[in-house]
Image 1: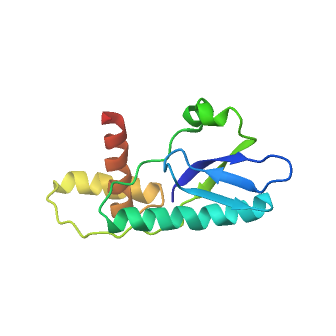
Image 2: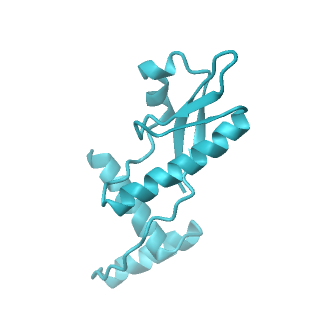
Image 3: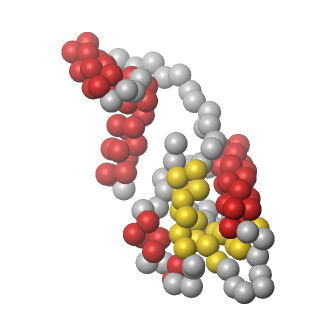
Length: 132
């Protein structure tokens, strides 16, 4: 599950507003911070569903340190993490891997409490992050 940072903005006599640096144009609001966060969760799911529907690549969440340095963060009251409660569609992939490597993958995945698929998915994400 991914958590995306959102900037919280609030002026006296206005609703709370949240914006996502990773998804420009995706915003949420509410009369209370709790209501704004709930609206942000819905807005994030809707954005992810639309991106997936259009075949757009969903970005990895930005590190909090990078978000804190953004110009928009300067007047934000807080940065909150919003859980991406969205199950991206999966695709079965058949691949050929040496038996000894599969055994090592299975042992490490078991040690981490993960399935083989989850382990390979996380390894691929880490390799992609390292190359960008």
